[in-house]
Length: 98
Image (cartoon, rainbow, N blue to C red; front, side, top):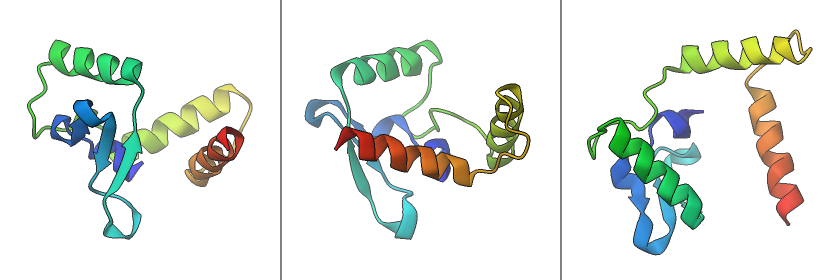
């Protein structure tokens, strides 16, 4: 979640098809591969919302993300949703790609 709310347009290297995550766990920078379609969607979103190079692409607070996770968790029948669910989903998605 912390990574998502800190992504800025300057972090996208379209020519190398990567996203530089500068606020990652352990305070290390990570490079995440991006598909061409993802780059196009991000560019369009940034342009439509007139987001500056140093502004967050998704200006969300941690509290708002927690609220969204809780709200949508309840909609699908999960009454006690916590953010660790996001980490589990991320791990499962990564494992399925391997």
